[in-house]
Image 1 (tube, rainbow, N blue to C red):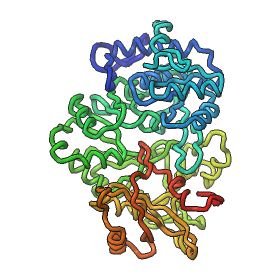
Image 2: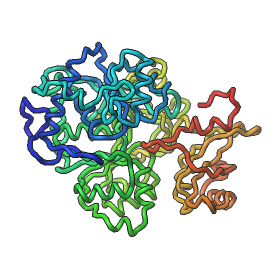
Image 3: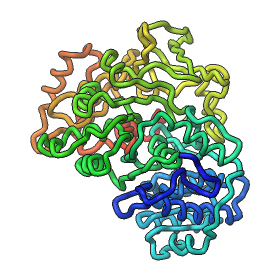
Image 4: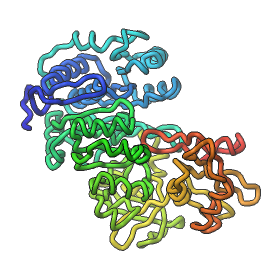
Length: 514
């Protein structure tokens, strides 16, 4: 896949390069479109931050926008298309973005906020120039189709944390598997080297592109591997795409697994998933019963990646390793080294739970842009940081995550970690999903409450029967005191839950929710 100096993509020809639910582009067509978008970005008088935001649902156009930013040496800002006006304004101001790409579902809000923030040009696909947006097609037609330069320095994405524990913070995205390059040409050469051992074939993007892990699909395309991007996840449609395009690799989160497994056996049996070679999963903890069922169905092709937007991947585990170490997220990978500490600051050995830290052997650690206090709080010392999780490692060095520090419930001075309870509840045949939170208790300070989505909302299981079932498997102090049946727990596409928001209705308004 040698990259000719005059081409934006790694290969030429009429073979499939990029497809979504509406259109497909050959490598030749993608090359021509990228030339125009890159030249359009280079022609814009961007300031020193060189930032362009993408506020749109998944589409081929969104993929092209992200890939063009990499080619143009521009820092893309992925924006969740579900944000409200104040949240979008915050991201635009914090990022100093000067162009906002929008789709038909975000053009009205994007136009309103861009106008209010000022200094932001709006460009939209399939928008009919609404809300003051320049139409994507017209903007493309006005740009040069000449080969674009590739000697400028590359720039990384500027991403914002999900905000599940507070207001989102900006992070200059770091992918530990991709070394830095001096030029765009060098960066794409590294991308091709990065994917050299990847199975040949098409990648399927199922998650939203504003999700850090999903953005890997853009780099996979940039390295010369075809990409199919799904506009919105639908379990049966995902199986159809896997069979139709003979998908070789994809990335999922546990929510995808649960929805796939919930399909009737007759539907699952209709589709051939034998083309899959690697199914990476990340984003949230995966209940062991769910992961085992997926391995039984898809085969030993699952690879779990643990880490954070701040750090990139810190741990990996393959299916055969996981079957031997069920529940683990794997061994820590270079350039990180695992360290676990007690609340008193004592370094802990195998099989003793504590707060998880990683030593970055490069000395970098993690950085929350514009928030030195949060950056300091995440570090024990320079280069030794935490992602906020609690867990332990076994004698072989396999890491197990037991919970998040911020989710911990302190009841009568005893620490309760919700994840253990949640995994049991999700495994119950009458439950679709469950979240455990801390709510007020006059005597103990806090007590555990389970928010449960029943499989049958009309006739849910009896709360007392569920509690009795839990008491048969957990120490009494760990068991929730009460259960509320709910329709939704607010999981985002990465499978994460905003527990701060879920706790808020139960606490007095003058209490700061952690």
